Amino acid sequence: MSKKVALITGVTGQDGAYLSEFLLKKGYEVHGLKRRSSLFNTDRIDHLYQDPHVDGRNFFLHYGDMTDSTNLIRLIQEIQPDEIYNLAAMSHVHVSFEVPEYTGNADGLGTLRILDAVRLLGLEKKTRIYQASTSELYGKVQEVPQSETTPFYPRSPYAVAKMYAYWITVNYREAYNMYACNGILFNHESPIRGETFVTRKITRAVSRIALGLQDKFFLGNLDAQRDWGHAKDYVRMMWMILQADEAEDWVIATGKTTPVRDFVKMAFGELGITLEFKGEGIEEKAYVASCDNAEFQLEIGKEVLAVDPKYFRPTEVELLIGDASKANNKLGWTPEFDLSDLVKDMMKSDLKLMQKDQFLKTGGYDTLNYFE
Ligand code: NDP
Ligand code: GDR
Image (cartoon, rainbow, N blue to C red):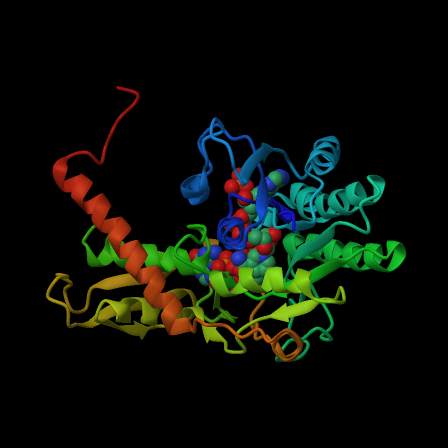
């Protein structure tokens, strides 16, 4: 049997990297769409790179952009994928308030461009499409836990763009009998999560504070509650969705929710540090209450966290908790990682990364000034 061919948009992102690894292990030929940027943007997939001069490659990168239809049509024509995983997006909810039109173009219309390219090229019967939908669609709380039947109420330009993407995927499935599915994924994180999402911002800052590289850090809404899973479990489900007999839409979540504040406590807890939170709203702060680890010289009573309203969003999504029983019952999906495994994995990796920074600092190699 010939190899299956997959195209992953957003291959340089967190999920793109894990999914590439997963599909390569399954024997796929994997093609990834990456943007041209003035700095290298392939850190997460550099370990998968294969020398173009060597025969038998199964991982290929192509320049492209979700805002460029001609590029997408040409690539899909050349690649003739059996499966497309549409993961590319301007994925930061807060930033989408700053760049709403671009977000609509890349995240909303970008999805249409993929679907329509498949239709134009007559690949409706060959190519299966996975659309990276999101729990942000639920937005303002209508019911908990949120499932495939919960009504949507998007609360950001990002979520509104993703709502267009969700429905255009359903529409193309119904109108043209295409195999196109939405995975409505709740937040999923990992050691390679983007540094400006809250979990990674926390694990990086906690590691730096413990090592004395930073004094304190600032967050926004500490009360927001998220259903956090591990990206490794979630990319497995993306693949399972496209192997199902019927094209359908699926919620993927752990079914447990946790406030941002508790994630902070868990991250410090990994290093044997406990915190005391005092004050309310924008006055809330966290102080070191105890430190059981002799490796870290943290003074008891030291302020390590404060709230900065600049991280508040104009409209917030307060509570997300997903009900993945459909995926569980029909596809047999259950997550292997729980939140404490996730925090452990992220803290282990960020502590190591920051120890490397500390080492460079001690050696005097941390400040290379190109402009001297
Ligand atoms: P990341 O932000 O880590 O990755 C996004 C990817 O999209 C990057 O490869 C980025 O490229 C690429 N990209 C952005 N804009 C464009 C564009 N205009 N053209 C081509 N590529 C573009 O996101 P995640 O991996 O975390 O998420 C993957 C997808 O799943 C996204 O669509 C996200 O919205 C969605 N999602 C994520 C969830 C999560 O918790 N992680 C939950 C639910 C949905 P570059 O590296 O150059 O920036
Ligand atoms: P989210 O993730 O908006 O859920 O979108 P993010 O980690 O950015 O925020 C989660 C919650 O934490 C609160 N928060 C902060 N967030 C950030 N980024 N920075 C802070 O300093 C901070 N302080 C508090 C936020 O207000 C929010 O309530 C992610 C993305 O991956 C989307 O692409 C994806 O669709 C959804 O998850 C599911």
